Image 1 (cartoon, rainbow, N blue to C red):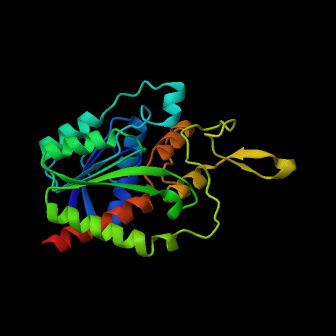
Image 2 (cartoon, rainbow, N blue to C red):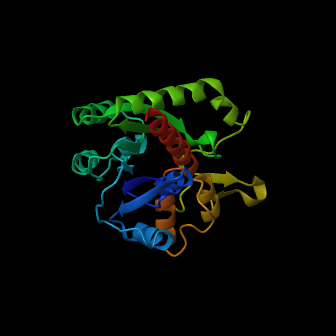
Length: 256
């Protein structure tokens, strides 16, 4: 198995997807108490906030400072991309997967990884190819082997150019990217359902939100309602993580 460590683990969407691709998580780093409750229930035997040797290092550092909404309303969240890079320098993984929103500074992150000796590919994916949620995200995939990087690039290009569009249901309407708000449905950034004139609009249920991220129903049980919306809204879509994990695994195996 390809072992990996997880940074900014959140609700565990990346871990779930990569494990479905045949990999194994060996540690999780997270400081939110509600997220730790979820991680502890689903991965009770995985060390928390304890760095271990790993072949891969993955994570989605906080994105509010890069998001459109963050630019409009401002954000107090720190930029932790430097922490991610510091962990890369410390752990020296063979491969890296970083998830974030589309932003020009991905090029700077790419350059920093290059200085650390990695060969990188920036891949844009949208969850609507896998679920009913439009969630465009940018993934930086890195390898310490140029051969593996080239294999990954070739594999992804081949799939995207040949049959990736077939994964998109024809004319399917996708809901907007999930937010972290629990009971707000007043702006274009919120997610709600219109059920006709009699019932009007309603917020998405916990089960609907979890489903749109590819999480099993009840995945976030046991924490406050507002925390459930926040952790699911910040999660990585499981099926996207699995798709990338399978391509990473294929590239590493074929480069040997």
